[in-house]
Length: 636
Image (cartoon, rainbow, N blue to C red; front, side, top):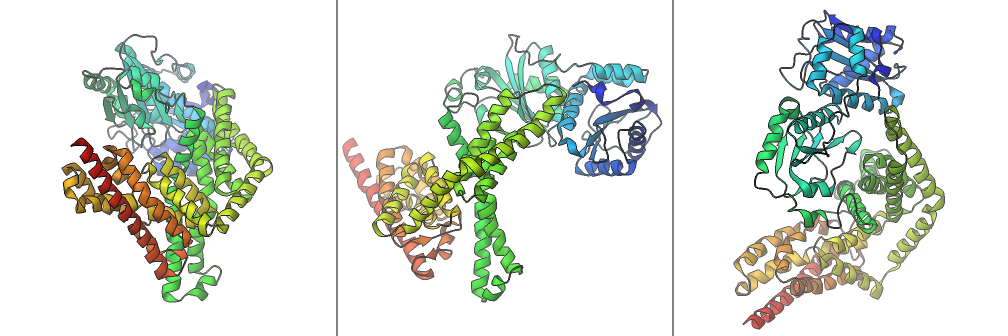
């Protein structure tokens, strides 16, 4: 964007005698008021100080970029002041920063962040250039400073893809996702260009992932720089690459040294050694639709697990308090503390879970702009009782819709923020909501109702078959895609009020871990020292409901070992299903035995549930020992 469109000569003041931050804010706020940019100086000052309470707005090299967002702002704009002496009490990220050049941004509340982000990104990127800053600090008049602000040097420091030097990758991310993110990126680009290097910088900021690093670039790269103050996304892409990890402010002060560290770490690294991993089906830029859908579902599930566990446990605690202390009357009174506590747990499962699933499935496909439409679609799915299936459909609709919009509805400059923060969430949410409420959601709701009725009507042989199938899936790959598919099915059933499938899942998860420990204990002579060491630990993981602990044991002989696990798991699943025991508290491990529902009563349920796991583990233990003997006999 052209920065001069957001300011003017009467909003630029040079060499003012302002010694405190409060003086600076009052001075610039008055300038904005006189220029007709804000309606109330008092209200705007309140907005500035509210923003200051969140984090400091002083940076490095004499700079500060405070800002306020309020209904009192009439048009997005900024005022500039250069003080005669440093402002002594202006807090900065760099402790030794002597603030003299202050840009105060005024953002309308109705702006939804579009102008805010564009101005900050543009200012931050341009101010990262030391020569540019120096010219602003030395400008002799407001006219000269306005002319300098009108220059656009953002494109000068490109990603230098036309050069032939080593390729360095970088990711920048700061807490606010704006100023430091772009300033650090610009500093690294400039330093790389000076040294004749190629560089690709991915900004993980308020707009999501920008200038995303491709897997082809990962294969060509010599090293990667992480310049960040917050957790970075998707760093698995860079496994094996030499890494330099620094605070996001470090490139602003020592960009040359940061890049030199990366070059030093890359001395023995051969670019392209990650080619096999990089060209696999999970390549970020060229995923197949099937892989993208699978990743989307798994991402959504990973985000709802904490909600499910928390909601289930809160509800269970409320039930246990009610039963232990005989507070049934209190629990039945609407708005009593016990009623509200139980309702909190129920709403986390019944109201919150599906929208979060949808939102983060959409997020996996199309990043931050898809969150709003994802939440809207999930809420619509809940409104029409389409449950877990409807939530997954809504997440896919929102993700692919926003992905299409990002590829086909674009704009440069000032309108890019409008597209990102208004068109994508508003139009996207409206389209997904309408589709779910009035078009595709209804058939899914009917399908969901049919599935619920089918599960609720299962008894005898059909229930045993379901339990056996779930048991097989849980132990088939010990936490892999098949296991996760079973988990997704159980969560979907739980969301629809049928708690039997998850009860089966929780019991079967102990089988593989228990059987490994038992086999190694009973027949130490059949197993290696490494296998016995694993066996000594897996039973503890089994108590926590973790199947992955048996993976190292299974890797050496997957067919025999996994086959043994499946044999016992099928029996466990069938027994739990036959008695129709339910469990609505995910992730409780062995403590699940105290939270079981339906079936044959509290004590009977606990004995059957744990007994089924132990019986399955016994069968798997026998199979493990028999198959190991067969293997050793063939090798003799």
